[in-house]
Amino acid sequence: MKIEFDVKLTAKDLYLFNMYQAYRGMQGILSLILPVLIFICAAYNWENVKLGTSLLNIGIGILFLIYIPVSLWLRSAKKVRTNEVLSKPLHYTFTEEEICVSQGEEHAEFKWENIYRMITMCGLVLIYTNRINAYIISKKQIENQYKGLESLAKSKLEKYRIRMK
Image 1: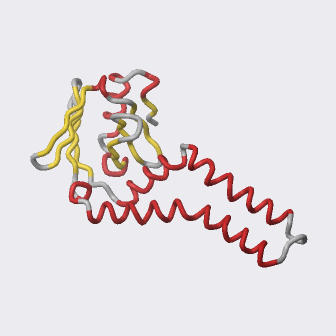
Image 2: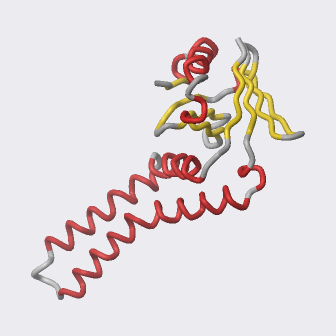
């Protein structure tokens, strides 16, 4: 079985991947818990402190909530726009033996046993080559080949290394 397709990474795809990476770690958890605690403290102390202090606390809480998503969006948009590698389509070839990713004269090949994990989330297929780095494929761009890719991956990867729906 051989599956081939081209995928062009968009700012939205990179943003969703970065959000996933940011919020599944301790930084992401703290960036959600801390504003909630700040809002609770502001509400609890509303009558005991000056109005300006309470509004400042609420403003800091809102800043914590929106800083990471906004900064990740701006970085993702800039990276896709300015990075020559990310702005051009990648050609993927999946066979029984390996995965080949190419762009122009450059190419990388990975044996199935070297794939760290393969998951789908938020309309993306993520092919991790290690714990942090992944190839990002939009499911919308490969909707005709997705079922074939899913069955090939399930036949080649151990069950604990794959989460595709």
